[in-house]
Length: 66
Image 1: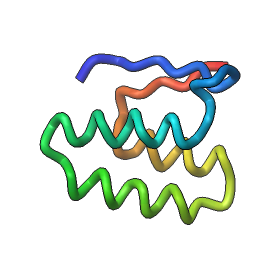
Image 2 (image 1 turned 135 degrees about the horizontal axis):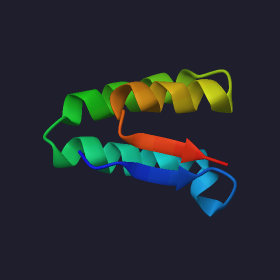
Image 3 (image 1 turned 45 degrees about the horizontal axis):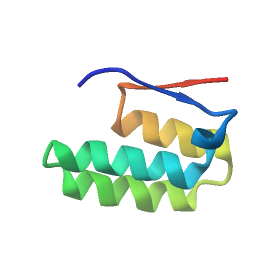
Image 4 (image 1 turned 120 degrees about the horizontal axis):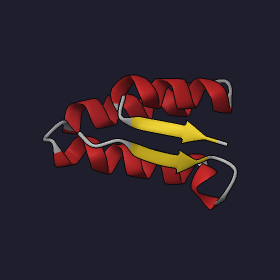
């Protein structure tokens, strides 16, 4: 997977935008089950930072920059 840079200060920083990008990335590699599992964990996250760390676990090629 190629590195995907996401600027979390702009409109790309919206958590729903990031979840969508991560889900699409996982599904493009046939990882539908992992995409759903990631979404469920992110929606239960207690903070934005925790949500980003969960996404990074599933999609390690995401790089979040400020």
